[in-house]
Length: 491
Image 1 (cartoon, one colour):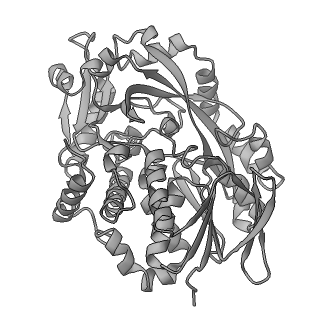
Image 2: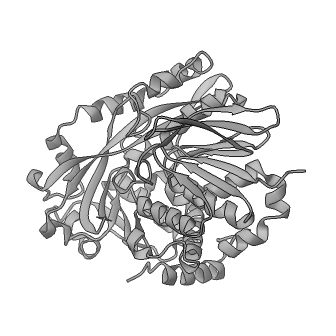
Image 3: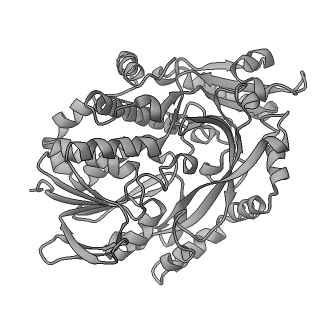
């Protein structure tokens, strides 16, 4: 029989560890949780606002979640799945507000309409087909569609001003969209946990090694970066939530499952506008179509963002390249991750993704002026002097060995040891937005019996729709009525 986890170590103080901490504490109040964060701040790597698109990925506007096949058929399955997961996240966050884990929802979540915007006959046809299918589902029933420039201008004036009246364009609009500051949410959750004395969290403490003991526990070697002292902490369950650094930590664990994975780092850079005259004309997140070979994190979008109380417009992200796996990582990260067990399928993956390599080279060579030219496809009247470049986050695209070949994975991947005593989350988008579902999946993978027989009621208390199908119109209405009110989503 599975045992209730009693001693848990979480590596990395980001949104994933914050989410898992609450879930574990509510399903097993006696559990002892220790969180170790290498940086001197919480939520300042992958979860930090400028390092994260902050879209609240609900598939309202992200066109890469609804691919169209060669016969012109749009597949909406992934969009529906992600939309359901974001509703789960909103229910969980509402629980946190109602139970005083999060004090100020308006500081991390703001109502921001989500739009998709395309031009040209082919892409307009695609967006129309996408709308026709999605709008039939209860989660997307409020979606609006238009090919009328005057209507689109009502939604987002900046993307219309300066266009020729005969240009073929189309847009969809979802008023229920959000802008989420996951760094702020992470910090509020951990503060709530600490105020209730439910966890131990130590910053400037770096996990250096993990060793499996003969009694089945894990010995975690931790270095205090302030004093230089080392200590060893034992745990019967370890979660690696270290963003791009998770692969390196997973490899140190020595579990066989780690041998099937490698990673390729992709950085990002925003164009940022803080000219109030421009900012006041745009209140939306506008997503377009990715270029051939672009990774999902590089889908272009023109976003309204509020970060630390300051409103800005962001466009991008443009891809950059660094051998670091984390923004605060080492230039040796990529080389450290390559070994005799994965070099073969990593090279195979590279050869099979020439388009991605070409795209990255082109992006790295772009000047600021060329980036503004890309922006002008979305905002025709954009001026070079109104925008500056800002480094975004560092992501690691997961490469998995399948039948001897390397397969590039877009999304998040849960990797767990066979006995369920260790698990890691790898990958990128939709990431933080679906963190609650990701952590529930992780618990199901590591503790299937307990999830099935012991923990359901506690989870349903936090997430009322858990175990139900959010394809039901009445259930969607019930869930959104609560979360929209508690989280103050609609103005």
